[in-house]
Length: 86
Image 1 (spheres, one colour):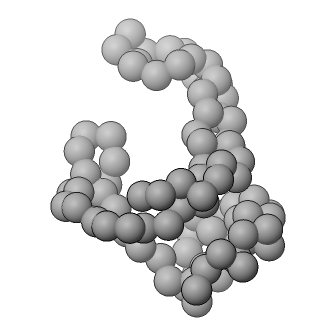
Image 2 (image 1 turned 30 degrees about the vertical axis):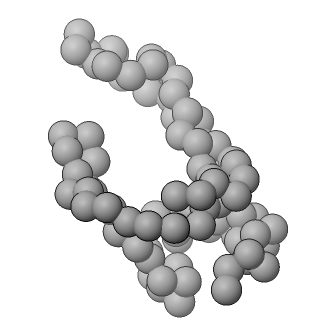
Image 3 (image 1 turned 90 degrees about the horizontal axis):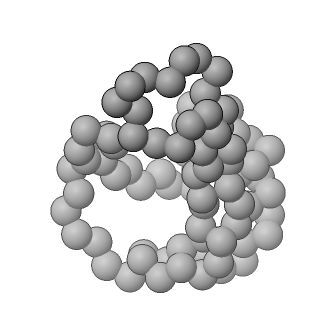
């Protein structure tokens, strides 16, 4: 991936008790989002923390559960960056 620019972050707050083996920042953690250009792709099938990779075509943004739930965030990213998409 070639990072074109960072575009935002999402803060998550865990409201339940911290499990003894919880390996992440607690109670708040952040997920960073970047607008990128894919220059190559290698195999990635996931691990115990992720389901793997999925590419979502732009015409499917309205039907993706994550995109629908985060529409305001996604729309702001696309509005400011879609000119980079060819």
